[in-house]
Length: 315
Image (tube, rainbow, N blue to C red; front, top):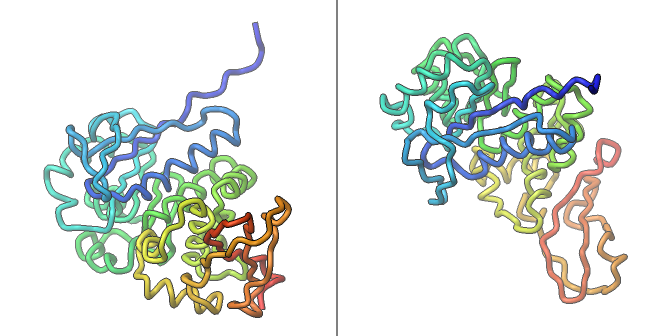
């Protein structure tokens, strides 16, 4: 008989999806768990996708994933995360809240993303907690639930409560959880695999080189992760819960150029495989230490994303 103790059973995350939730919100939570399993080389985390209605609910793009059940099926999970798009008045309807109020108190670890923060707050289980909330929804949240505190960080995470202001912030929230549970080495490894800034003890510390705005770091991480199927600046801004104009302003303040100029096609030129890894200074961002990777296969035109070299390279 082996003396090696078996690995503990995987921690089960119930992901409760409201109607019109962006697919990005689901991926932002699942992918850190999936990559943690890969780094740990074992199934440390499992997840169940649940809908707020027994018949399932459509996502923001009109698709409907395969759900494993509905709200009551979250019972027995180790964690429950409420996923939603931007807050809308119907999200805390009695029909939506009744089963959630029954099951949520039975679960030790609770979390929420975007509009899901307001939904979870309606259960009273975020009282006295500081939560992350989209700025445009903050006043209504506090008016409806004055016992809830606010942080201006993109996510907030404690041992038993975690919130993210935007769909993309869900990744930062989960990375912070992984850091608390497994240590910095595991969390940093997962962040690298996701193309995300390495997590730190606070979102501000994870912002990126020079302690810049975490929303810029998150946008750049999303750009890197979507090179094969690039997203527009407007789509990235929506994922961050801000307007395209606000994203433009953040990029200009941080990097001296807008996000639109951080993605430009490179015309085909060289044919050798060694050319694919070439890097050259971006002439549109002089003095900012920003490089752009060039893929110069014959006849190929691909969007290219800026990458910061770190504090030493910044002007």
